[in-house]
Amino acid sequence: MQPQQPYAQQYPQQGPVQGAYGSPQPMPQPAQPSQPQWNQQPYPQQPAMQAQPTPQTNGYNPYAYPGEYDQPKAKGPNIKLIAIIGGAVLLLIIIGAVVATSGSGNNSGNEPTSSTQGTSEQSTSDAGKDIIDRTDNTLDLSKKINNKETLKPQTLKAKTGQQVNLSSGFSFMVTKTEDFSSSNPTTKPADGKKFVIATVIVGNRNQSGNISVSYLDFRLRDKSNQLLAGSGATNEVLNNPLASPTELKPGEQLTGKVVFEVNSNETDWVFKHSETYQKTTDDTTFTVEGEIVIQLATAAASSTGTTSQTGETAGGTTTVN
Image (cartoon, rainbow, N blue to C red; front, side, top):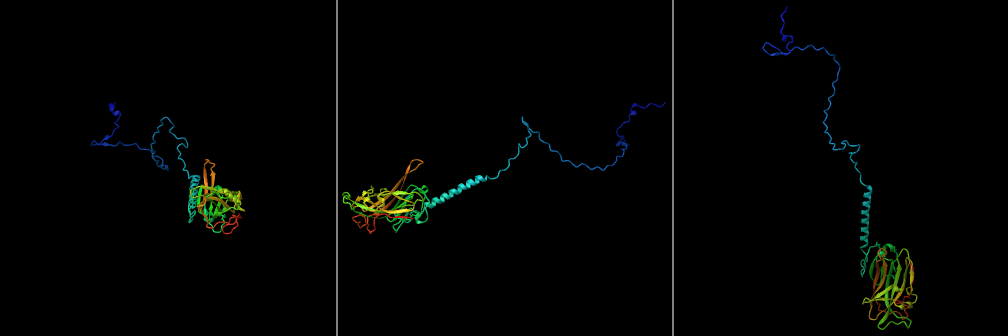
């Protein structure tokens, strides 16, 4: 009978074996069975995942709906707005050029000077000016106007032999002034008075529409600034188209006579034509007027009043340009 081994020897110690010098010796490892060799490819290395922050809900869905945070598309320039602004700037430039042109050169070199209010397009030719020097005793009506566009407040000052062109389309000119004696013995001026007769040419520069004119459309202003109406003695001048209202067609002109009763000791006056218009927008009125400084001729007219100083037959002639 073999002696029994101590209980501790039944379970040998699994720790390292002490060598001769007390150093641990590695335990023998059991043989590993051979593994079959496969043609294995290593997996490519995946990038490390970034930790995503936990969205703060605060009571709403943190995940945007489709299109909720899409960036707005950039808009191109507003072509229509640019065109409107450009057109307005161009219109202002054109208006400024027209105003500058109309405000310069009117009545240049003429005495007396003319003063005008308002604006209207003026031609560079003499026919388009407010005051025109004339030497042939006729009006220049070649520049036709539309008075709906040109009508404006106006005061023009000229002298004998100058054509006055009003913005209404009416033109007139005084060629001479002389003493007048009526052939009617009952037609006599008052004491200290005398008759003077002015030869005046009138014309219509409008593109359309007639103008009615007579001697009652004119006044004479004396040195005391008193306005004198035409005398009834005008009716005694033979063949005088201004003795009664006469229609002037566009482009038409005529020569007539106007008689005034003035102070005997005066020789200088102002021959005046004035028109009054009313604005339909605010019911205000404005005037369009022209004044011609005249002087009495040294020679007297014939006692019959039918022949002028130069022998010209008194009366009117109509010329259509």
